[in-house]
Structure formats: structure tokens, C-alpha cells
Length: 110
Image (cartoon, rainbow, N blue to C red; front, side):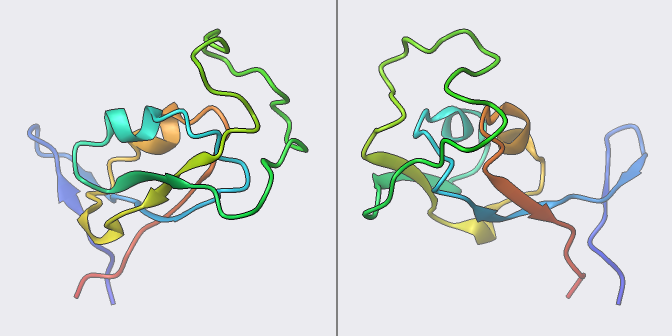
């Protein structure tokens, strides 16, 4: 079976990679993915009884220099997939995420 493909306005083909998972263990609940998503894919929810995974290569800082944005590593809120089936595979969420919480995959055409 072939994968889903798209065509840009200029006529170039591309293969969208759809969000499959969001690792809430590394999510800091910053909301960047929610803000850049052109669809209604994410929602902010209460963290379910776990701590943030501090054992990643990024430590406590991110590349955006906005650590004073009101979010701490012990936040009780994280992002969740509200409607993954509404994802268009643009990858904006993965590019903006400072903690690399997302897993994306190309999907087979129906």
C-alpha cells in the first residue's frame, strides 16, 4: 500500500508525517505546540501522577531563552492529544517543541 502524499502549491510532492504520540513524561506544558498547530489536535490536561523526565539532553533550559515564562519543570499541566485524527502532518509541533516530545510517522493511504 502507498503512503499518503501531498502536493505543494508549487506542485512538489511531499509525505506528511502525522503525530502519533506525545511523551507527557518530557512535556513541560509550555503550550508552544498548541499555539502553532493549525488544527485542533492538542489540549492542556492535568499531569497524571508522574514527574517530568529531567534525564534528557536539554536539562532545565531550552533554546528559546524564555525560562521565566511561568512554567516550571514541576508543572501539573501537560499537553495531550485531543484529536490526533485531525493532524495534517505539517510537523510544526515537533519543530517548536523544546523537549522533543513528539513521535511522527507517515501513514498508508486508505
